Amino acid sequence: MSVITVERKVLEKNDIIAAENRKKFKENKLLVVNLVSSPGSGKTSVIEKTISLSENRLKLGVIEGDVQTDLDAQRVEAYNVPVVQIVTNGACHLEAALVRDAYKKLNLDELEILFIENVGNLVCPAAYDLGEDFKVLIVSTTEGDDKPLKYPAMFRNSSALIINKIDLLPYVNCNVENLRNNALTINPSLKIFTTSCTTGEGVNEWIDWLASKK
Amino acid sequence: MHELSIAQSIIDLVYQYLPEKNFGAVKSVNVKIGKFSNILTDSLEFCFDALIKDSPLQGASLKIKNIPVQIECLECKTISDIEPPIFLCPNCNSSSIKIISGTEMQVVEIELKDEIMEEK
Image 1 (tube, rainbow over the protein chains, first blue to last red):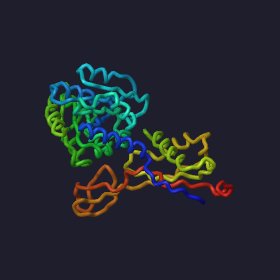
Image 2: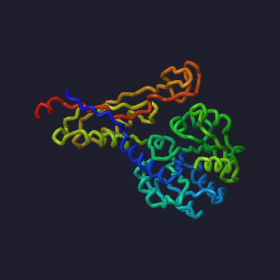
Image 3: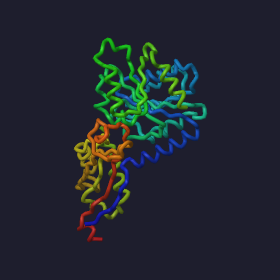
Image 4: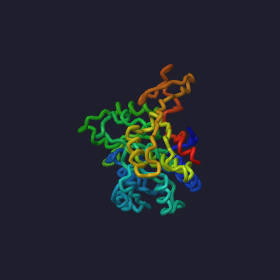
């Protein structure tokens, strides 16, 4: 029986393009943040609140990823921030090639920080490097405090965690300390923020941290 | 959920290794999938079979070797197998660990059927 040895990573093609993206972002001294969460945790709201509360302190740009519609891009565009929408037409995650096509539509020289809002999904985006500096995971209090244990790969692969919708804590069954401890069990180096994009609580701490990374 | 994309990436890699005249000669594609790679192996097999239907790879099987999650403790240097989602060193309970295997998705080798190779 003949055997052909391959020994290559399945996602090698994506990893190569991600490395090219990362090189380009480094050349432009751009901080690139891959925002990941379940659908509806508040990724776009965090972007909006970051834009409005940072008051032009950060030169932000946004790549929006969605299965359908450019509704998120419209929301961001209302703040006069450069934005490009990727519509995946059903695909459950962004890939490096989609991000490469999208960033070419932005003037990177004008930006300091680029948010890539991934498709809302805590599984598939964990496997696809986009060329970002790090991933920031958003989990909302309405999702419950056991999310880290259910989706460990995403928590393990992220650098920071934003616990969002803390204004809803009186109405939902979520213990933030449990959520925090569960997340730290999976990834002890996670930097954790608690925010409400409705009241603005906690968002400035996140912005200060973000600004310190650029 | 993304097993279909992963199956397609595996097939794309296989085609890179097959000279045109050997199409149809593939007996199996052997892959390593880490247990912490978010891949459901049954689903990956299903997607692979669906994608190779009526293609030159039809009939090839996907042989999946599951790789356990192994960590190295950065404190006591012990190497251990663990079960996610608990990432603690079983020896000293430290959380300062490095994952050394269990996240891989790799095409290892392609097995060809003998009879087709003999015709060459």
